[in-house]
Length: 149
Image (cartoon, rainbow, N blue to C red; front, side, top):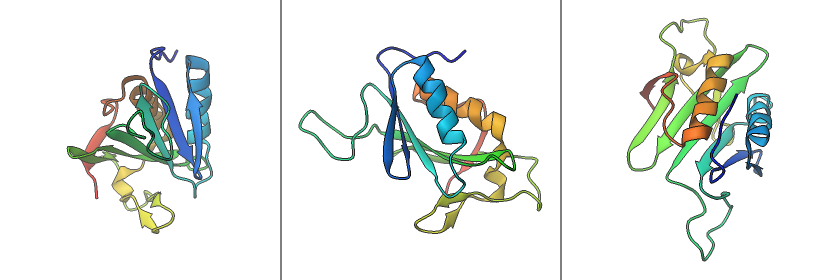
């Protein structure tokens, strides 16, 4: 079962729409929504002490210093992740078993940028990493990482 601190709010941005999870049930639903998003929609997840906003407000920053970018292809049962801790880390998930047949996933639909194929991991492993990030707000340890682009 997923656990989340009552002081933690998870924000997912899908297709320019903000979605929030304040409790474990909402978190499970939000992670499923991110995983099952259409292939052309890349999700951004934030785990923080407050909801993220699309603008800076007088009470402080609109986003935390870290995020998890998520791309999935549920039909192929794969996902790719990019963990970004601003000023510190930019890492993509890494699948050491990836080969020439491993498909790359879309990183940024507006810029037509793609993850390397080596970032494509099994969808269940991606789900575990997303859950870990949402619970902790830190880089998931349940997947291997490689330098991001």
